[in-house]
Image (spheres, rainbow, N blue to C red):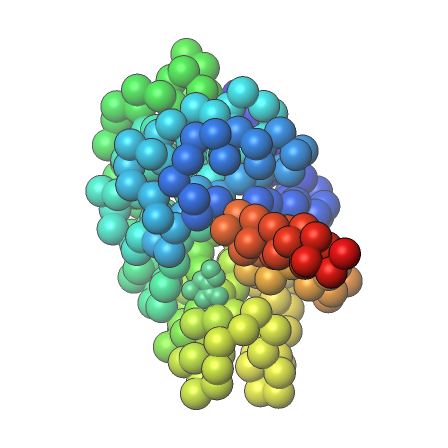
Length: 251
Ligand code: 3PY
Ligand code: MG
């Protein structure tokens, strides 16, 4: 199976991703049916374990939406297991050094490009019988830049062969510079976000950033970011219900 979002990113197009934190295959199915380009199942901050992730990938693949996973860290074994369950890409958090970036790439690529171990039970079902022949080309590797240390090491990290793109975590980035949480930090961190995007794009790599909502996605797209997400499922559900509730309370 072809990775349609990898093709979009290579063609400099925008990819709209939905962020899934609720451990539910039905929620994942509902979200995927909205028509997003991709859904990211979040094992770092989502309430999701491996078995739940597997059922969410199965639900997402009732549609053409591409399944991605955010591992809980850069552990190679966890990344390999996420890919074996049929994820067509990872968004790996807290990649602060070139060594971490190299180990993430190695976990995602079969030899000779990397050290991924062979045995993708669901990869073969989702990707097809020719999964092995195409996995190294189709699997998308986003590394997250979200700390001062990562910014200091940015050039070296971007030099790591095999990285497809950089995804910025604005909350953690802001915290590491002494600011507060929020997806749209101002001042110094805003300039740093712009610098990360510019340097990443200059290398021909894809750029993405976590966004709080659709309006912020629009802003980031206008700034040149390619991979954006309007909040996460829990936040969208909560705000949608709050609007409905206040409509009734105000009548
Ligand atoms: C961040 O903003 O730090 C993130 O990782 C978003 O999920
Ligand atoms: Mg983060």
